[in-house]
Length: 134
Image (cartoon, rainbow, N blue to C red; front, side, top):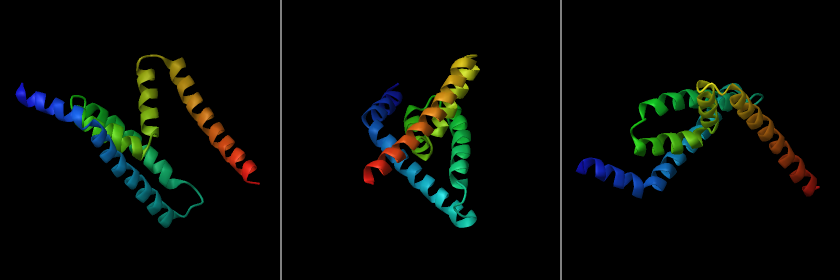
């Protein structure tokens, strides 16, 4: 029991550091992979982004099961690394959970709202900024 308590205390005290460490590694990994795809295939299509989102979603699915009982590793890998590598992985996981629960309408609403709202706000942000700059 003492060993388990030490692990819980460590994770509690260093949660922010674990997420930050994982996040920094995830961000650098995403940047490097996307850059490599641009070098290899050009920048006419976002191959790197699609690759990172696909691999990140698959990896999230694997690690969410493997790390079920490891809170420190979950913070480091899922919240930190995977959260910075791609937030699409979290979106995918949450959508799958809704589908597994049989909440198909809610899942489709989640998917639709994420895509529509994100694309719309990105476009709006570009338009507002360009308008204000001119």
